[in-house]
Length: 90
Image 1: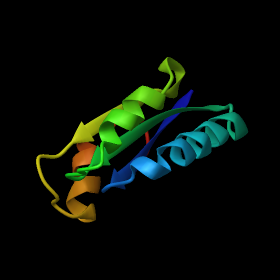
Image 2: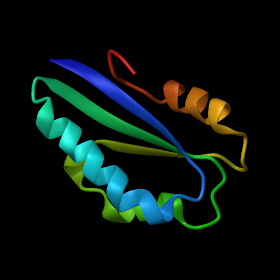
Image 3: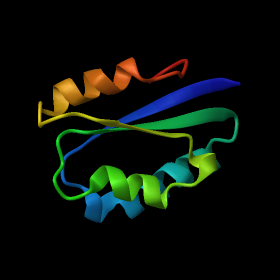
Image 4: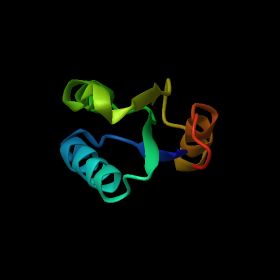
């Protein structure tokens, strides 16, 4: 089965975690022929984005959270996320 890594940079997105996880689960359901992983890069958030992601995720979500020490910007966050991908495509 082909695996796909979805990389999402996040900066102070705690309020949007539920929606992100719901959209990710919808994608997985809509494409049963693929295996998915979600790699979220917390780009220096101060609102608990990473903690909320970990609290709301399920084991089946195949979630990886990468926490950067400070805000580096979305392009660097995406690059960091690509390093942590294991999929055939990202």
